[in-house]
Length: 445
Image (cartoon, rainbow, N blue to C red; front, side):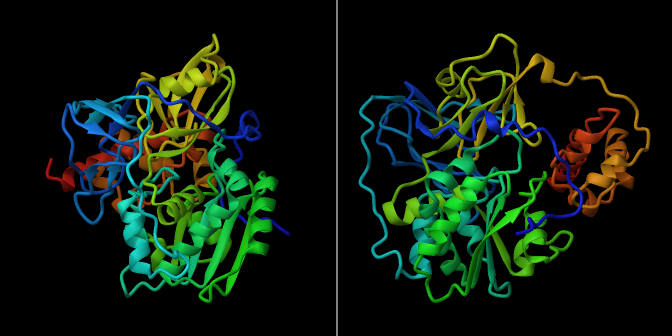
């Protein structure tokens, strides 16, 4: 079968061989957890605990502050020692709950949904909302909101995003190989909520074991009446194949309009790890307090994949991977294309943390860059058909009056442009500056 793809994109060094074959291990619990209260896109949460409170694993410690918001739960049992701000992957300090673990890992009573296969969509949605499920691929958009499109946006297609096109990361790969049935059962729940009749699982063709595992499970599934078509779709290994609009184009040949959303073309895209979290919430009643995280790069001794409780300090993951190599130079939360460089490994993991990457000195690009030479290589690879060099130049010069906001905000910040730039210009960073300016203007700042 010919692997499907999209226009543009790049083929960076993927580095997935460092961790792809490493079976997922349970990470030992740290002594302290730092649970950020900024775990999702949307309204802030309402804190429910205070210093000195005793909590149990799975206990609700902060409730959603609105419809577009998500509950947050304690990752283990212990005592709340602080509600002061802690370091965040964004570089800011944000409100958080610090929990000193008691070592017992005592859980609250869980409430799975009775007869999930026949439960009505409202019951399923409520279980997903209670569990605090968000997009686990990095976007962290509340899943119950994504699964509640307006009535005038009927959904006929659900796409599972198993592309994991970001270099080095293998967390999604491992969950597809190790938990294919759970992923598919979660997807069927999502499809039933949406009323979708078609279900596609997009996986890059550099993951043949994941494709086979999913295909084997699809063959053995007893499909509900609403599903008329289901298939695993091999995708060309090309970055950013996992970007929503590119994934939809590759699999369905539908074009999401500028300023539009997938639901505008009858599609919802859900990450495979999100589908697993949906299954866990519905079948087991477990909230999102744990996920697979890849710890990788040539800057760590023993790359691997781990089941990690939310709020675990990144330093604890590095220790599990054997520590830093002598020439370790750069720590990134996420992958090298869209991740965020860190100044400390004291930052905690979050629901959206899919990887921790450590690069060596010879892999790190210096801060110097040259003027744009108008080669247009960035235009050739841009998956959104944008002129990144023009957007970046205007933002760099502070010429916001000539920036078209529709074009600017169409950028998905994949980093393909910066990757191919011969002048090594930080194009994505300049574009982010432009977006930040207009967001500030909107807020009246």
